[in-house]
Length: 93
Image (cartoon, rainbow, N blue to C red):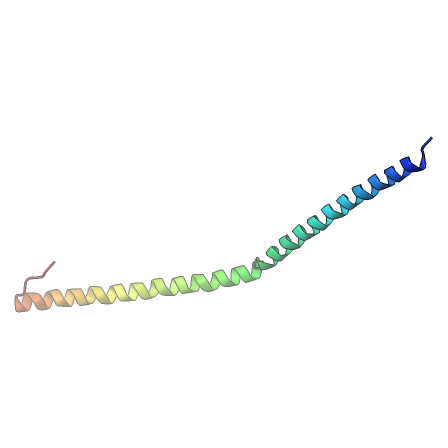
């Protein structure tokens, strides 16, 4: 038969074990909160596609501007070459 001392020891072990379980649950809750906080920083699908659409629009605009600049530069180079030929200046290139 169990004595009062034995019952007290069992009760102490149960309390100690339950405190450890509660402590681990608290740690897990903290980790879950950290993950939730990080997930909140991730943009939604709509936000992501909106930002990518804006970015791709800027890239397209930059490429179009580069084409215009390249064409203008080519025309200027052609003109300079013709002028150099008429004035008889040797091209440095």
